[in-house]
Amino acid sequence: MEKTLPLFPLNLIVYPGEDLNLHIFEPRYRQLINECIDEEKTFGIPAFINNKLPGYGTEMHVTTLHKRYDDGRMDIKTKGLTVFRLINFENPVAGKLYAGGEVQLVEPGDTYSAYVDLLVERLERLYDLLQLETDYNPDDENFSYRVAHKVGLSIEQEYELLTLDTESERQQFLIQHLNNVIPVVSDMERTKQRIRMNGHFKNLDPLNF
Image (cartoon, rainbow, N blue to C red):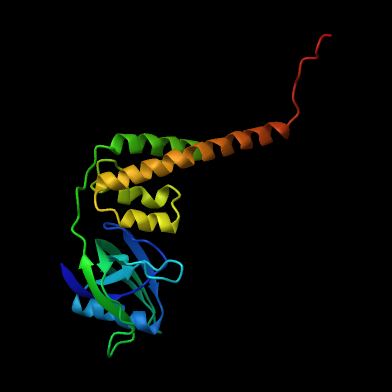
């Protein structure tokens, strides 16, 4: 399905179902958000990476106008809806301050995956090494989206995940990433332990010659 969206490029990745708080201060984006609120329409956040628009983004809905300041700035709450591919980009839209363009909404693929147990096993290993509490529910639809920001992906890797159509593909991507990361984190932990040990006196039995 194709549609026209006002566009708010950002150097971050937003996933469907994700809540994102934004502070709106530039005049062009104040105009964009005011129109979205007044006309109850959505907008898009295309990923902006290395000064480029690589082509994928997420359709967003303004859920709450949290605060409006006297000078026109706003604090808003938004939620990701659907992944899209950018067809064309117009900056600015005729008669507007902000950019816009035609997008192709990506039909969601399977939302559950047979790889979830393997993914959870590795997540628990990582969080145990980092001594962090887990705060996710593996029974959620599109579980990969819920944990993608919590496993140390680069923005390029987060973008690659956004371009994958099915939950199985995304979970396999995260499993491979964790397979690479966990040995590195584990080795760091061993190094920290050695450093701690070297900083304390040791009780050693004298050697008998």
